[in-house]
Length: 177
Length: 177
Image 1 (tube, rainbow over the protein chains, first blue to last red):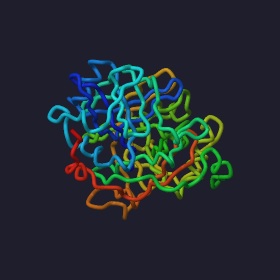
Image 2 (image 1 turned 135 degrees about the vertical axis):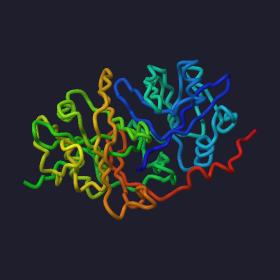
Image 3 (image 1 turned 90 degrees about the horizontal axis):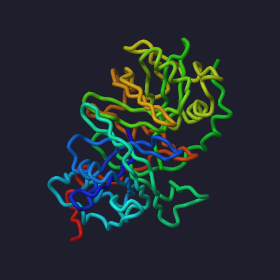
Image 4 (image 1 turned 30 degrees about the vertical axis):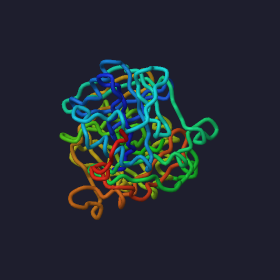
């Protein structure tokens, strides 16, 4: 299955850390909330719990080596604070990967534990979007060109061309009866 | 953001119903579990609660009109039982959309309520994959060509070409120091 990849950022022991995650979803749009699924014992989780904040950064094909590096290497063993140029926004402790054209600062709402994973629920406090990607106030996905991950095992994929307009192409669909 | 679309199927009042959902994620792979986010008061949820089962069907570009139809029309108002050819597998009450090349039968684990949405957690009991899509025992995503939804508002997108191998391209990445 093709799933978008994000980089979940957190400040761990005073340093920015980024974890590559393909298991995440929007949870609501008003107010905006995101759910991110992390393996157990991630360094990122330590930082999220400590600060009550995290970021969700959307990489593109240009970032693929850095994304894969963040996926291969654990923050318990490798200092990932230099992988990206890091800045901080409203929350102060949610590291933003400046090379990613879209980043969301999130305040931790809660952690839901499952047998093999933990789900981190966050309220999106501030969305950072590169100039030039906004069209009519929303992110133009075709310009953004987010990176997808083919689950399981890869490869990374790009998005392809538009197929049809949403909330429109189905208006003329007639179920067989 | 580009997100894959699925059709969540349930038997509602004795009839197959399908709801188009772009807010979902894998929750675990061993044992396999999926989390699906539904708006409040969905007809699909009635069926999921009643039977304790649902399906997650992965459409492709060929199904885009039917997917959009399922997204536009509520199961409270429209009978969607004829949108797809429907079959049933192991669970007996999780309708499989035969036109979708991949379908997962899920047993409901729990529903987690959020202010504006409900998250349905399901254990994947049986995966149905069209012949010809399996390569080395896993679904070949480039042959599957899943449909993506550009959030918010569309359009629907296809997947594009491969960008890089996963767990490999990052091995030679050197963070700037």
